[in-house]
Image (cartoon, rainbow, N blue to C red; front, side, top):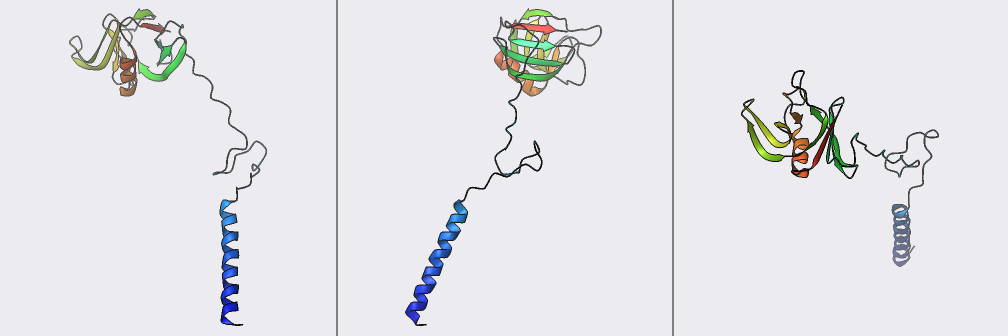
Length: 172
């Protein structure tokens, strides 16, 4: 074979290989069947059976509540016209003899950093809603003297969202 024919043949082979490789690179992967009907999908491929939409989060308070707290489950939510906008977030509340009372209250004031002279303790992101009872950062593993202890994230969210006059509902 002459040099020009060999170069021509080599160039044609190189072009054919490049076109074939480009075709493989651009090919869309075929949908794979699940391992069994209703079974798991293949990682990296779109879901064959779409997951169900998440259930809406509901809280046990009225549409008037801007903050909702359930004592029996140690949970709290932030609300807007009956819809949950934050939560549930874990809480702890008053121990026996210092129970956090159920009822409907209003936010009276809030202070980013408050010092409890009654208990000689810090109350970061304190949002007061029933006299000296407030939502604030504190250990949620222990019960309090009536206040609602929250994680840092929860207390900060409540502090930033609630304003004086907002309705707080506390349910059993």
